[in-house]
Image 1 (cartoon, rainbow, N blue to C red):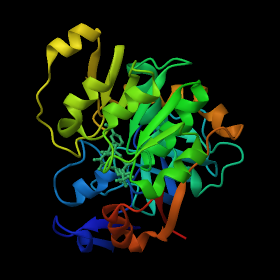
Image 2: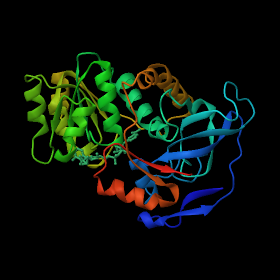
Image 3: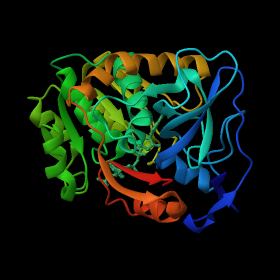
Length: 325
Ligand SMILES: NC(=O)c1ccc[n+]([C@@H]2O[C@H](COP(=O)([O-])OP(=O)(O)OC[C@H]3O[C@@H](n4cnc5c(N)ncnc54)[C@H](OP(=O)(O)O)[C@@H]3O)[C@@H](O)[C@H]2O)c1
């Protein structure tokens, strides 16, 4: 088969579409013929040599895909050859075939195109696990999402709104109209406006009950300042650095919590539990049209370098997909 390989860690041109050995399904795994994968910000880090795949994962990039099951390994029940599925991966999606633990498979939601389904697993699992399992977001609460135009952000807007939360986002101004169409109640231009002041203004001084953060260190103090009493800050990205100063008194006074998680490093059993939760609680929202995959662009997989440049330029809203056909 062919896969995108990283010749030498570096810029987008390090990505080369090359012949590699075919995957074999191990116990509890299936092999999928990949129709599409999606680009995640973490892929840019892996390409640069900063985010190696966990032990046992395929060496190729790609944290999610959609396609057709072509082989079953031993001890797989409930899935069949020829079935259209999408999957959460620890790696290997930028390829013509990939072996996947059956616990990380999801059916393609009714009404969603097979290629577009590749835009869903990583964002659905990340957003659902953090907003529901970690932060316990409730109907009627206010959710602040940083990077509302990202793959993660466009999903979080739709999911938070579907849960009954008021969603406030930060994003560059050119993306605001599209994010309001997705359900964002308030948009903040983080380049021109102070998001703490804006969140307080739109919540009558109360603050956000939950903050989903992708910036890390550079937003830590301001995120705590933006929290309501009893608020929950969940950090899932470190685009603004990894080490920051935390005012524990501010946290104590508000009886607030800070959590940080990463999906890729979780053991397979936890990933399978998250995938089950997504199938039970998120897929019905997709199948009734409350949530849809937001796709900025489809490119042939051999043009993965161009797709990475698109993400680096940052003008996209939602996901960039890589297709094999
Ligand atoms: N922990 C996990 O398990 C997990 C899983 C998946 C993703 N993530 C993280 O989630 C983040 C989004 O991933 P993605 O693949 O969806 O990325 P993406 O589509 O490339 O989006 C990156 C976003 O960062 C925004 N941004 C940059 N500077 C900002 C700032 N100062 N304030 C607010 N927003 C800012 C950009 O918004 P503008 O264009 O508006 O500037 C852009 O929308 C990444 O940090 C990724 O590592 C974590």
